[in-house]
Length: 352
Image 1: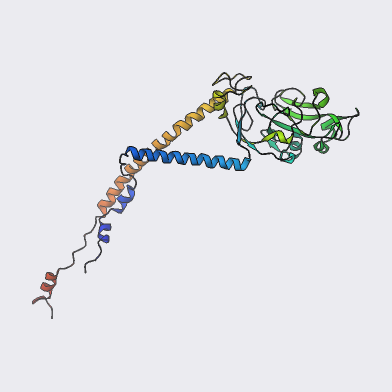
Image 2: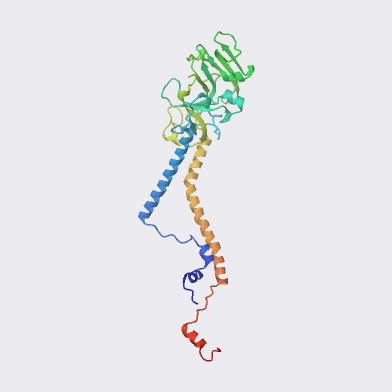
């Protein structure tokens, strides 16, 4: 009986091993200008959507726009001439998360008690506008302690958890303080500072700085020398842009090279390593290597993929030939025709 459908024979005519070995290896046909334009537009749309998704996810996490800031100065570095991943250095891009209340920020004092560290030091780093209300570039410094105005002086509630040897203060009446309330000045000991390379005392004295008493965070850069807090005084929550959460090292140097900061890096252009106006040399070197990798990487990946396909095709071709030679397709015998049936059933065919 003849099989009524042709597809089994078509399957037999195809070499399965060879078809599998070379699947997807066909030589690509040249594309037209219209096809190339459509492919480019598709890739551009995919890239745009990817950036949109990433930026949307960052905004959803930080609740701040833009979600990242560029560090323009060396005030948070831990050395003068070397940058480190995990430390805020000149030219880093820092992710900034929203701050809505004082409890959103862990100060240095609180971090020391709870062993909470960010960027290789206790407490959180905050991005804020100066309390003076000037339109200068926001500052990125570490929150040392939170002070609360009480009329004539200030309270520092977090100091109550420290031992008496870790802090001392003077009350508004002029006598030594035994509790962190109603203070005129206070000294916190054991604050790390990389400008001097050793532990130091920070004098938080309003009277010597002529700053009006307010409620907010006293701040200081990790690499800023001296024994006093930042001269602008307490930073209220309303002035805080956000707290630093993560970094993308080096890449902010691109922005600072083409659009230098108002008073920071990098007015002298690419490669400036002057501690006062530039960035550490290893930051520039790392940025250059990263840019080369970004540019060359796609071409290297494409070349590697093409090379792998070529090697795979060359490796599988002999195997396909061997399988084809060792297992040739067997032609099935054609069913007898009507004439053949008549001859086999005629006289002398052996039938009864």
